[in-house]
Image 1: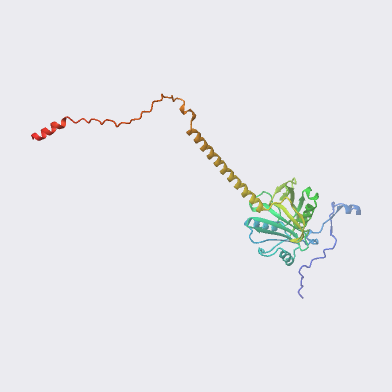
Image 2: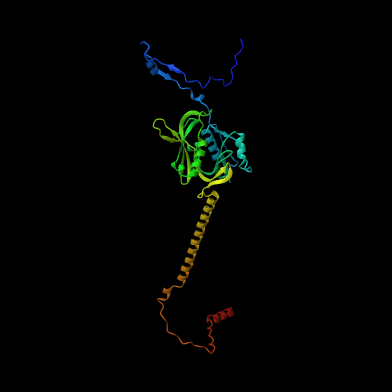
Length: 341
């Protein structure tokens, strides 16, 4: 007998209708009518994995050189939460940003999350629709990773999230554009090979203090309450560009203050406090010197002094008489005693 060769991926036709299994309730009784049989029929749905994967969104998550350990852990957390993401090596600082579009094309990705580190302390995040745009640049603040938070929430790896947006996203046009970018980037495509057919956590995007606050919560089945999982981050919008990583500026945040300016204001405030302390010390020194001078010229020092009678000035014109020196009487006797010997 010739060996039967099985082709890889050769499955039964997916487009066939779902099979119907008949379950008869009462077997002992006579066969029921057709209407009763239809009532007892149970339709078995086809498995979820046989669906068609039509949304081919792929997100490239990588960074530039110079990031710290916290940013590296944040990138790893986002990759675990997004099964449709891909990773790449760190990009050199000297390279221009438009090279990211070429990297996305090589990796077959149409969305990109690029973390750019500056001065080893400032972190910027680019979210872009490659290669045609638009793209947005954010300053990332208040990062807390999964390993750092140690929250009680948990979710299945690869499960699809719900996306919850603040109502303020629909009031202004630039927030509406960011909402569409977030939906296309963070939502896991249906029937993705690496995804699971469950919805057990929520990504929330909230606008407060002119910033976007990102949180991840678990949905508890019993009472549909939320328990935070992590990670946490705050996005401060800087600019929105028409192209991918460049192009005409569509929106610029007028309330944004760069970290360099913020640190400069802190240094100037500290210097002003030091100058104020020095001025206070100088004022105290001047007050002390004035107090010492006043004590030296005491007004009450002459209270008990009585004025004396004025004496006439006597001018001596003659020399004074010489003083008579009295000789010692015992010296003569001593000489006589010495001569007698």
